Amino acid sequence: MLKESPEVEETPPLSASITPQESAGIQETELVAPPEAEISASSEVGARPKKDSDGKYLYCVAEGSERISLGKIGIEGNEVYTIPYKDLCAVVHNCPAQPYKSEDNEVVKSWIMAHQKVVDIAWEKFGTVLPLGFDTIIQGNEDTDPDENMKNWLREDYESLKEKMEKVRGKEEYGVQVFWDPKVIAHKIVQRNEEIQKLEKEMKSKPKGAAYMYKQKLERAIKKEMEAKADQYFKGFYNQTKKHVDDLRVEKTKEIDKDKQMLMNLSCLVRKDKSKELGEELEKINKMEGFSVRFTGPWPPYSFT
Image (cartoon, rainbow, N blue to C red):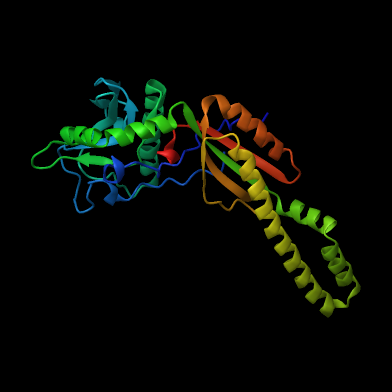
């Protein structure tokens, strides 16, 4: 059976997020912070202010009704704790009301990995979470401190957040990527397509100048057939996968190398008791000549909240 990839360093997509303004296996996934305009952490602010408690950095929303500390596990070692409202709670740390920015990519990566770690720990502790994108910050204003603003958001969007909780309860996110070897696929096409075989024979019988023209014609014919096969295989693999998931999203494919091309890239929301069935279905694809599958996860449902 095809099992989910053991590469635990793989990072799930952090760009998917809920925001108070809106409603309340694989190459390494590109880490993208959500636009600063999504949350009130304005880019007009200059240097990070000295006061470290005029904002709340929001990791996720979880099911919980108590104010508890999760320890100093946050970005830059900040203490992470919960702000409850009814049976929901925001998982936060205190911070200046300004985005985390650095010219050092390694520093930014460490922040994002810390964000992911907190969401993972909250997921394990509370069971159901709605992850927020990296750098989601709630600030206070002249009349309301950030703690109260956070509670106001939870109160105002309570019903919407509860609906999202129900959607992802008992489910996990997985990445499914299907690759093919273009040389193997092209060879199979030549073997099975009579018109292409005829062109190949004619090319070999022609003098050098004419043979070059036939070669170009042959390459165009093979390319056209491969494009048709790619569409055919994508639809087939998509439907095979869809049978075993609650929801899925088609993500952008990425360039790998000349010997391997990504044909399909999906984010899948899967019930915990259905991941084995999905793995078995993907194993059928993985055994096909010229194809391979990468199956990664489980993660909190970043892409579905």
